[in-house]
Amino acid sequence: MVLLWFMIMLQVLDARRTMKIVETGSSCKAKQLTSLTKRQVEITSTLFNEANGKHLGTWPPGFPALTVEPNSPILVDRVQCSLLFLAHSLEKILEDQRDNNPEDVALHRALKESISRVGLLSACLRGVQGGKCSSPPVPPEMPQNTFGKKQWSHTLLTSATHYLHWLQDKLPPHSVKKNWRVNIKQKAIRAKYQAFIEGIGYLL
Image 1 (cartoon, rainbow, N blue to C red):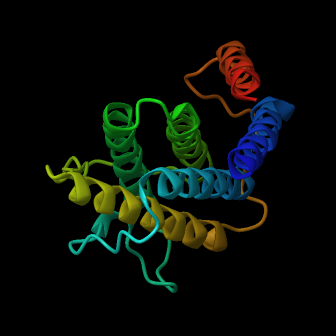
Image 2 (spheres, helix red, strand yellow; image 1 turned 90 degrees about the horizontal axis):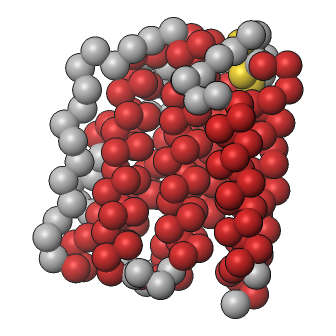
């Protein structure tokens, strides 16, 4: 219970930081947003492991869309494809966890927040760097058996954390887009944030 409370409070603090990035000066700070997205995925991974087991091993095929070498350069089109793949994969995990862990509201919220952060990051990077995923990656397929699903999801979250860490390191310190606009209006983002906080209050 203490761990759950701690992870929830980290989500609250990170959500507030994300709101500042979205609202302050209508600018997109790519490196900072990447850091916050990585942190959210780390929180999600911890909650997933608490709910599904900590010794799941690694899904053998891995995820090429999220695999990079430390010295790999940023290829803007490929980054957009990787983030698209990541968002779709997180949606698959959320769908599976709603079926197999229907009572774990904190995990569901963390997954939804991770999906939202990845979407914001993708839009931010398009504004800063350009880039478009002209050849979308093959949609992720989760194994059918229960253990395979857990191992797949665990490996995906671990791979996503490593990928976002690489991306954060590669982005220059002042990757900022002024007069940034995303398809989601600020009012809608505030409403989403408020609903998130109210949901946290329910959990506490």
